[in-house]
Image (cartoon, rainbow, N blue to C red; front, side):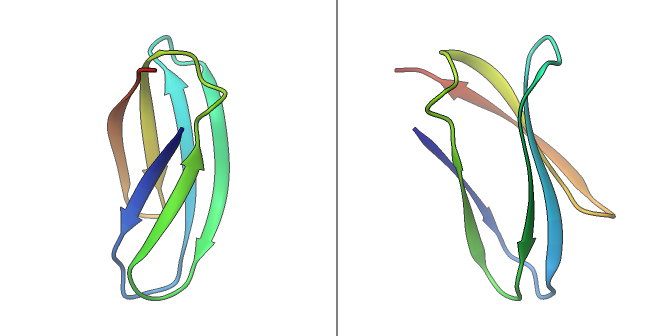
Length: 72
């Protein structure tokens, strides 16, 4: 029911987190401001149906995308 994004960064950062389905429809979007050091960001996915989604996390310089599978 929750996806945890673990980040390690020495600086304070602002992140954009989006989840899209495989067709490209955005099903979740959030902006998160994080302080210095290691941290974990929880993302509630209880409202998503079973399936495959793309999780994208980006700041002003970097973007990474991971596949997440919701199976209940």
